[in-house]
Length: 204
Image (cartoon, rainbow, N blue to C red; front, top):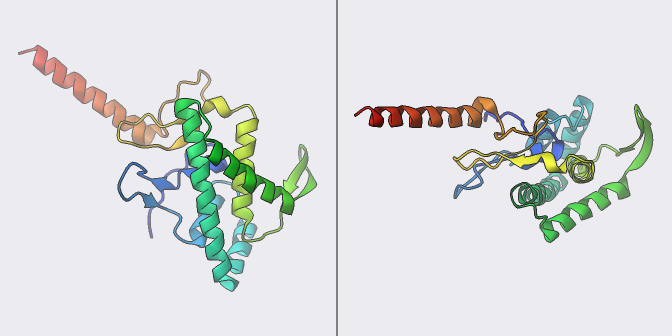
């Protein structure tokens, strides 16, 4: 079974956007190659309950063609979400086409949803249809873009080309890496190596 990376986004839409590893490579690693992968990823990111995941996988088994089409559409949304927030995080610019694509999917989600009482007021709810992961990602993207946390969306500062996105929840907004156990430690190791080389050079 393929090992999956740590989820570091801090928002469902960013975690799904991060389901492509090594975007700078000629052949990136895509973790969403089947509808089952999509359901598993959304579940791990906290978007789907165990019952919803089970129901979606059953629907996918009963309608493999529909599941394949939905996977394609969800992956297209993923790319729009990534390009939108990566542009905002690195250049402060929202790509109009990507923004429009996310908005279209959000509009589609609202057209299939209904408002229900929740713990903190009303919330959107959807039937457990194959499109549910896509709808949830679209909702998450709009919530993140309009909910006051947009300025805290960052792209990993790793020099190795990691482009994972995350919400910086640190108090002083100083987080630079997607994960301290991965890119953060690599950066520290490089700095230590550079210092040691400089010390050796200076001692000659």
